[in-house]
Length: 96
Length: 305
Image 1 (cartoon, helix red, strand yellow):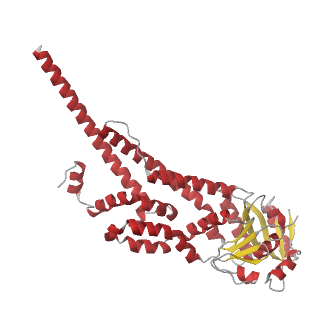
Image 2 (cartoon, each protein chain N blue to C red):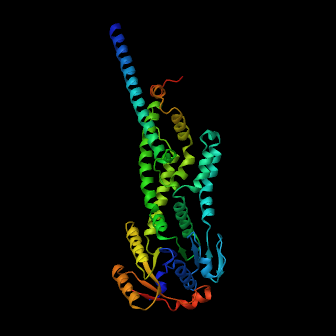
């Protein structure tokens, strides 16, 4: 009986950890995709900063005030452009 | 058939278009003087090279003023319009981006006034403002066709961009919602001000497109003279706006002289622009300046099918 309960506990724990692990993996890959899509969105809107064609200014002008947080993120990302190690740490959520 | 064919059913805008120097301002002035007898009329020139005031015989400015009974006029200052157009956004940005001085955004914002395309954006915005004003008819003397074509096509360009941005933003928010819901362990519904603003913009653009496509509310008049280049430009202009389902309401043939060359030209116009009324303004040996002279000249104008 004791062994059965212990096994049940182990299986339950394993199930919990594996599902949490899978959930974490899924969230992480989704966060990466989210981050990439956000980059594309900001590039589409404000690509003229780096010479890319951009939407008519009537659109960007109205969106710009709402983009403060994304712009901050974009700015910090651009500050470490070309820093592969930084990106790697970022992907693994390592904070220094 | 007379000039009243251009009267809108309720209230509307007449956009007078054509190559530079063909007589857009002359027709705008003649028509405004004619329509004021029946309708509360506003005549505005959005051509940076303003001559409306010269033809009407009044000194006009940015502000709309009544120059004669039932006739109002203005010559908006382009720089001022641009400033007004971007001022609101600049103020919000300068306030919210205070801490981001490192980005030199202030300089960028000031440069917005000179950015490519801002003139077309501003002109379109001004047309939307005109449409809301309390005039039964607004006669707009437009810049040469190249600028007007870009202004008229702008809502479709905006629409294309906004739809793509909505699509992308929707996906981004989809990811964000899923991630936040997994983390919170319950289904979350997130509100995104950017997506809301894009949707709002999309609705406004659709309204603008519908307005430009409404032949009762927007009448586009093409002006030409009996010469090859203005005629070819008018044809190109017609073809270009037709792509957006915008059509010409009438064609004005200015400085018409009843000779073989002009008659042949009229035949060519008739065969090329079938079903569109032609407004024939005869050549005037004296300058048509001032409301009195314009009013007396109106009876010489012919309108044919």
